[in-house]
Image (spheres, rainbow, N blue to C red):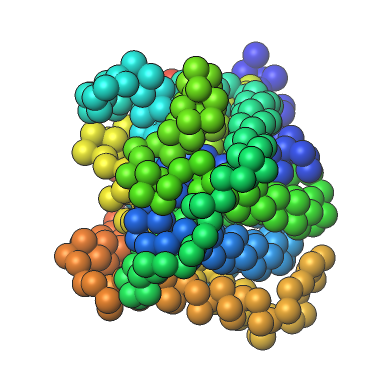
Length: 472
């Protein structure tokens, strides 16, 4: 038996199982998460008027489209999984890539997953607590069960995870179409009072606009998901740009129509103070069937959580493969070919973040750090366009597009800090910089190299995992 094992030196590869439909489902499936069911009221509270709110939703869709077009070019030049991490590594070097990986794996991804899990849990328990807010312990327990369930699905098989993504994508799409049709019916009946004087009471302070953008962009988060799994995509040079061109305009149009439908049914005040806009809409339009919206919103968040999980585990996996994380995280299951150690690690961190988690705080914190690194990634694309024109690329965007995205990223990072400085931003900055303190001794100088070797061997045997080669 040992002889048989030795005679098969070929290394493991992750399977390329994601086609165009899977790619669109992965992008749109993550984008249509809890955001469109929860963020409209916070966008309205920040910006003050329905007209300005709709304008913010349209601008965020445009920004997501421009950013994703830039990422499509990056994905066809650098054909490796890992999204921002691998792009920053190839354009800005090891230190910046490690700081991104450290921040992303320890904070940004887990907070994003926790935010989705919390919103899923809130919708699941809402029907059981109609007259009072649900106990925090119950919400967090349901969120933890959701995270653990998806860990099992994603560790079992890539195909199962993609099947779950496509199924939930269809469910979400139907739910949003129901909301749009309901809104159209209400408008045809002549209920247009809420859509008159739509720009009254607009709050034009820089901080309010920045915060409204943050809450709205949370609903669009996921536009960059496919770049994290490039090696598992069939014909990425064709399917990556195509999937982006289909998914993001489709989601933007749906979001705008859904917001108009909300406003047709609810007054801006009702909308601003609703704990879950979709459920309030359901109770008003569908009457006794209002609970359907609660179920749809819960399934939507669950599907989004699945897609985030699928791509989030890959970033941790690629960082380990490049030597920026422990070796065990760069291994895949020998039979199932899924990066199970990276997925389990992401789960553990997410469950720790869940303990003190609060939804709105999570969104603002997540957006601030995420847009800083989006800016760094887009700077890398500008570098490649100016200095490395010789590199082959199947797809290219006009240079003005990444410049506009970079300016938007700078605004989103600096505007809230300048307009309303808060101690949280300082904590975030200190945390990001602490990555440098870890990088210098442990990654650059490789102090204590044997520290994790024994643990790696034990975990490798226990989890039945082995190192993986790149799919290039």
